[in-house]
Length: 265
Image (cartoon, rainbow, N blue to C red):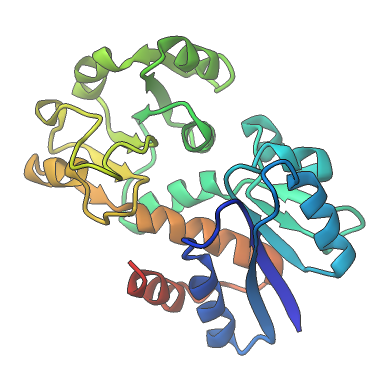
């Protein structure tokens, strides 16, 4: 039996176990997906322990995505992003990947969105970094808007052809934008949006990385404006799909994994 898992603190809320196990069941794989919750300062040690125990692959979440870089050989994208959310133990040394970027790209592609033109990424934290690099690698010109404007400028200096902005610039940025991604937590704990509703328009495709609630204020406002909307569960699904495919070498049963994920929401 192959054992895969998730390292984080906390992990009790995670929707990854039912999603991945639905994938194993659909393909008839002899595998399990479990969770590990080490102390907040033990991310690197957790990866080393998992390797010793013969774990086949790990997902990594808060607060360990940066810490585990020291315990793996990072793939180029993960190294540029500065964070790892997937570890593969099949090689001589643990290999670290970041599938959050892939998750956003594939979520847009699933909805038939053309990844070209310009995008506005709201938030310059971990998710914002991953999405900004992922879209830039697809040839999209990225504008990064953040509450602390200097952080947006710092990230933009790392991402090819990106620009940094304060949140007050969102209306001007969005006027000619094709894509919008919310990578902040705004909308998770309150019925609020990081983007003024009047700045949204029908030519936008809007992805909100928040998946609880599944329909955020931002997505409702975007739908009212006639925009294409993509809920955060799609990004969560496709980052998991990318990890599944890295570990197993098989095409993921996306429909089965999506059904299991949405049953938990």
